[in-house]
Length: 172
Length: 80
Image (tube, rainbow over all chains, first blue to last red; front, side, top):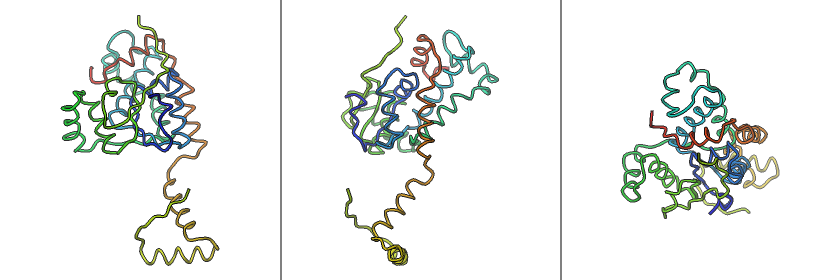
């Protein structure tokens, strides 16, 4: 089901990719989802792993735009340039804007990390971050998980919605 | 749509709420609802601030080339 199908009043956990598609204008559905959260038609929540991944990727994005990283392994390149990292500020404003917009933040609990995520890994074979995201979504009793990651489609414990209108950059 | 709810409230709080409702000539349920709405919205941004935040995030994208965007999407945050 598309992101437009998430009912009003839902508690919706968002994955990193949906936020990146919204920021880049690659999915009108992703942008409409954020608009509905901003208008309080539904409640959006970012689990801690999503927050961390998004922050990291937006930081890399700003560094790309400024020409501070080129070619492969951008994280390693940026890690070697602490003075550049100190000067990056636009990505922080973007992340802060999500909070102002009304998105909630949910930190990991001990139980998410040491019990529930492991059980999810055993059931579904997800990697660590995806298991923690799902553990948090289930703990919150979320109605919806918004993600473009096809691996989530197999789960039955929560309804998964994906952007069906992606305008992705062509592969090389 | 309004819904009937059952809950426990301290006698003293109820007494104050009844008095306020009587002073303002309003049903007590209105007084309780107003107090709850104020509590739930405390700390939340003003609608104009929320809209500005949406515009900052969605309407001012970082100018990435398709290749750069692909790289960001595929980047493994743990692979440094």
